[in-house]
Amino acid sequence: MNNDFPRILTLLRKEKGISQKSAAADLGISQALLSHYEKGIRECGLDFLVRCADYYGVSCDYLLGRSPDRRGITLTVDDIPEADAVGGENRMPLLPTLNKKLIANSLNVLYGLLSKAESKSLVGEVSAFLMLAVYRMFRLVYAVNPKNQEAMFSLPLPVALRYADAAMQICEANAHAIAAGVPQSGHEPVANPEHLAISTQGLSEEYPLWSSSLLNLIQNAEKRLSR
Image 1 (cartoon, one colour):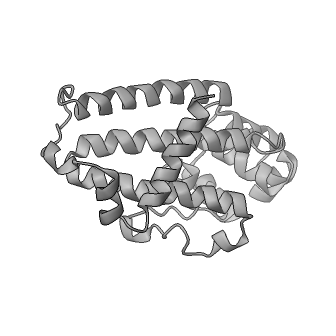
Image 2 (image 1 turned 30 degrees about the horizontal axis):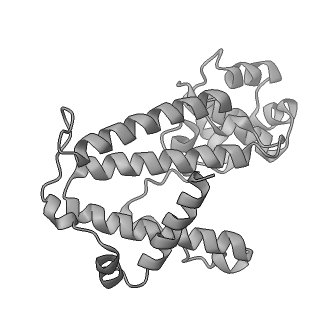
């Protein structure tokens, strides 16, 4: 099958809060066989894969790790909701809401500037760095409750955090090389560096709704760094 199937099969059962014995009975196989499937010792057939998908209410693509969405959907730009579209912000306490807005608004400025750089490589490296940062912090928050199933992830926490740290350093090094005009092989340079003339006045004029958030974020970050 693949390496993701045993992990996801175990995760779904544990999230449902049922024993291996109960799940095996419901799926029409022995507990020993289900144990082998969950440990990756044996591979299942297509019939069992479909039964599991129906039993847990997920798609076969999700079970196989081909899609992170339980329905097997592959997201396009149009499918991704706006950050506050579902109104979840209104249910947050003040401090998380404030910090989220500072970060989200600052990212709007950052990506506005990146669009001027006209370098897919720079956008890619910056985006990968930020995604890895969010991934690392989500892993730490997820680990607060010891009952949360580690099988949600393919890498154990200590390994994931160290790999992510190394990957972020590589992303930063690549982005730095691109920004400095000496990109490594396979990376695009910044097409028009002169388009990235930046000043506080220019930011305020071009991003009147977001620039103050960025300037506050810079101030808060440098206060923390100065400690």
